Length: 346
Image (cartoon, rainbow, N blue to C red):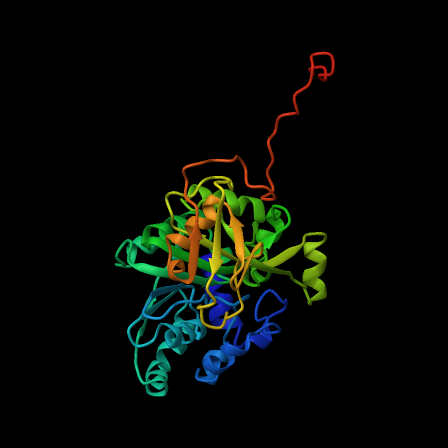
């Protein structure tokens, strides 16, 4: 599969116009604040962008960031502007042709931005331990439509967990399927290169992430994908694919479910580009000044990460009230009944 991906992204694709699906390159919802950043990126780098989402989380000033599967470097050079001269962005990719484009324009970007805070490494994202990167040294790790291309996704997530600092975050966009992808589709080189053949069944991803040490993965946003090539559409049949952005926090205290401790938070409105509301994930949108009840996991995701100074925290962990209402789980036991009312055992 490494050979398939290197051939597809190194030789077959010359620009985003060569793609056959909408898995990559969705710009329909690009926020206004991102446009000035992209205007300072070399046109050739932009033309070879094959991502499927936005992987520029907030509060990056001074951060050390790792971009997995950086390709020609579009996201690296955007992130470089967000972390600033005091931060650092490292891009990892296995494709020589893509890295050549990224490195060729490094001096151009340094002159344009006024600083050079990026570097590029050739390597495999399943083998991060071979890249001489210090464990626990990254504040943020990002990836844009690349994890699906890896033949060993468990190894990818385990390596990410090892490299993140405590309280660090893996913020990434990727492609998922509504069921396990059949072998015939996984083995189709074009479908694999288009990020569909290697897509994980969404529930398998949650299991793999948890086993790697990332409890309670949070879905930030998602959209259905269209397969615009008729021949590929016939091959995939009834399979449904989605582009989705998740955030995974390296926090050892996170529990396997959303537990209620009577806690709440209040957003201060101090995060850049989010003066009125801050979106943690698809189900947690914090309005400025509003008391927002949260489960223990959400409380920790805000309290023990870079978000802490932007919230007021109410409560602690001294009292437990069971499962947090509305989290998707519920107590599995029937309400108390008399013996005559109980259902017969199977």
